[in-house]
Length: 175
Image (cartoon, rainbow, N blue to C red):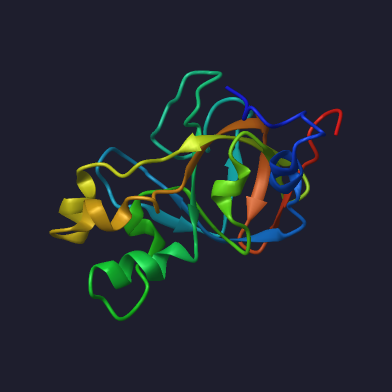
């Protein structure tokens, strides 16, 4: 369901929500070769339109809301801090496909972003932590991840993207 304020040009909150001049950057890409296996860090990945990332074991249905998962890179230090760790966590431990810096991902819900020259994602919703976080991060891992689990997205337009690629918000149609 689209956010209720979008398209309401008289609302102050709608104007605030639509103001996203920042751009982000791909910091890390990971693929899950098989269920419960560690993620493999890669320099580039291929997003298949309305499917998944090539080489990732996940096989979401066409039109699915979880074709790719995104993580706020800045949250790696926050989650580590909640666990009493001095250094940020390695992104692969949180089991998301892509870590993005410089852009508040939660502000992108129900928006589209372009990664590099070709890839377009529609941000679908939050990617809440699962009980595996206790196994991966230890006691308190689940609660440390709450609010920091990232987002899920649908692949609107596929292509290759790489670490270092820019992530920019696309204007809403009719805006």
